[in-house]
Length: 196
Image (cartoon, rainbow, N blue to C red; front, side):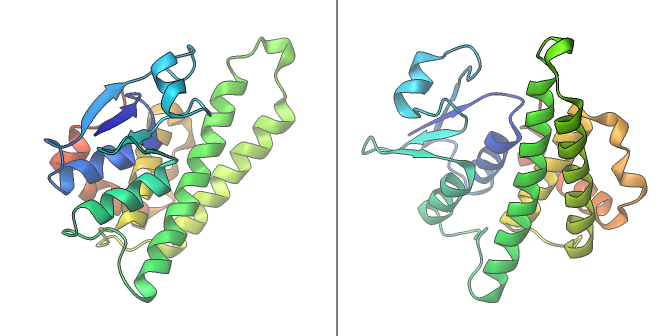
């Protein structure tokens, strides 16, 4: 199997963490891709030209990090990152908020690559406000002891926000998120996949 990634992608990082936690590193090769630069190999497996993209042993392409994480969770049942019962919905709800924060951040980042005269400060402000609301929602639902897909996605979002938007200073006002981040970022699966 192959997982197409870029080193700074928080979406790819979620998948890379699950691969390590589930002991799948021998089965899945990580292939560096350039989604911005017109990477032909990535386009062949994901017409949307986004990372991550997983190609399984049967040649089936899986795109979008929530779907890929669900597929990885099914490949190796232990540890389980998408729990059963009511806990499942809690984990998935947390994942959606985390992914939303990352999506807003990516939009801001891409908008800021445009010439200054073409940037929309209105949209940048709207996306930034969405990130801040997402942080508040994540804090309200955070369990510093959690280790499911929601927690993994949340910490991927937080660390990526630190990487790309250090001025947010979210940790001062979100103590449960700061505790969750400190706990999970000490795991080897997280240290090996830090954004670069």
